[in-house]
Amino acid sequence: MTTRLIIAAVTVASLLAAPAFAANRKVDIINKTGSVMTSFFASSTGTDSWEEDMLDNDTLANGETLEADIDDGTKACIYDFKAVFADGDTVIKKKVNVCEISTFTFTQ
Image 1 (spheres, rainbow, N blue to C red):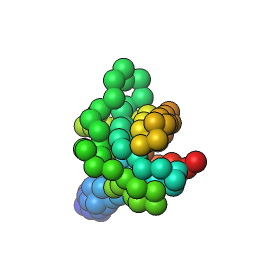
Image 2: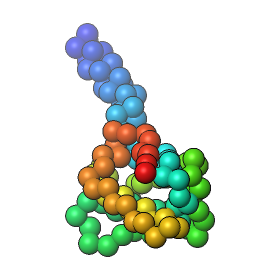
Image 3: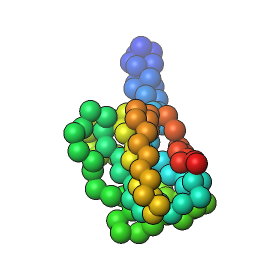
């Protein structure tokens, strides 16, 4: 009987702890470039095309933050980021682990 109670307790504890280990793919994208960001894309590394623009016809001024839900349903953690700016610059950052970070800052 004691063995069953221990197994039950371990099972319940592991079920309660599971959400704590779930990968959080929400990342605050911070613009500190001095320029207005006009588009932001995040696509799973190895994908041949960019996903939809997460700014969705909005802009991200210098100093502003976009709360981006990077989860595309694949459970992937490694993504490539692409930011397009009003001054014509495009910045691509490859292999960002969105499961391990909570903020990502674009700088000059």
